[in-house]
Amino acid sequence: MTKLKLGTLADDRPVKVAVELPAVVHRDLVAYAAALAAETGQQAVSPEKLIGPMLARFMDTDRGFARHRRANVA
Image 1 (cartoon, helix red, strand yellow):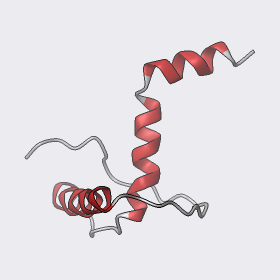
Image 2 (image 1 turned 30 degrees about the vertical axis):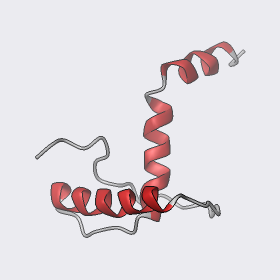
Image 3 (image 1 turned 180 degrees about the horizontal axis):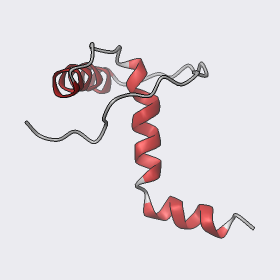
Image 4 (image 1 turned 90 degrees about the vertical axis):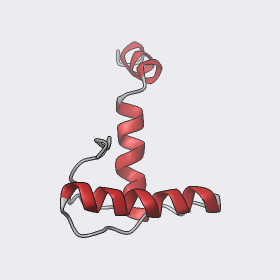
């Protein structure tokens, strides 16, 4: 199986945010949740629980954003 970018999800205290997603993105989140459960052996999580870790991973690996943050941390 392909290694997914997300691993075991941390049990952090959440902050509620309302988001509208295209249906195709929601379907992909459902499929990703199933793949993640199969790969990690964890119980399947709801697609909504994936959005935070996915956004965090995206921002952590965005080199332009990292440069911007370093430049603005004075």
